[in-house]
Image (cartoon, rainbow, N blue to C red):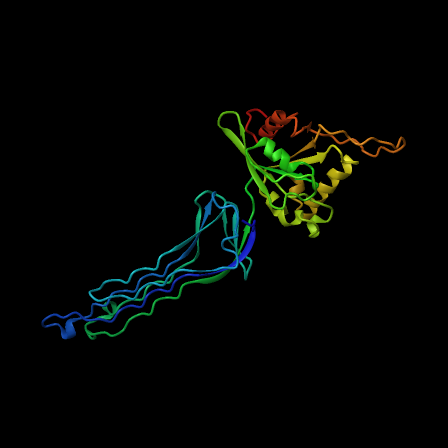
Length: 330
């Protein structure tokens, strides 16, 4: 399954059914009297947030249509309404009018629904038009047209914590070590081609979600590399965890590069609460061969961790829980 986090779809709600022109048979009633029923309502298009849906791939480039309402019937019976079409979308999906860029809905709660295209009302049958001067009306209403829109759907992961780092900084390995997620891990840059999401348990009943985002490189905010495709997923996080690889030759420069890309993409991101951790602490730091200039200037790390040996992981979980307010008094 491909990870699709943005797509454009056409939605068309059903038209309302036509009202009926019919007459009942009854003694002493001219032509039996009108008894045409109303047309049925057209089906609506509804989007619903579902935790079981993780990507927009199933609806990309599709035209979504609902059924029309059925025509009214004799004996004042209304036509059957068109069935509503309910489309499941991932939590954190924002729906825009693709023509005006107006936000129509932001689906962030489980089960949250929004009608994105309203079905047309059914037309009135000739029963509604009978009067003292017109006892045999042949007038009826044609059902209303259903709404049609072109929508843009943008998915943003809902995570408490976002892991930010340069390619191959160990984000996927850390996510797997902290949670039950099973991210793809490799010894080469850009292993992560899609964001990953894991749930970390803390204590008996508490937990928080962690998102592993593809590595950022210099210029990501302008479209370079892979990270730019997923910067939007950081926007909903409450805490950023910066991973700086132990083997980096310049810790401060690596951190500044990450911070700068976030600030360029959206200045609000650079102001989010953060932790700075030194990852892969089981590996050796580069040897400084320059005695005059520090090739790896110090960086104020909050903690050092190793996803391989487990060093610092429990302390990191507790530190994150504290920053998220899961620990009273921190």
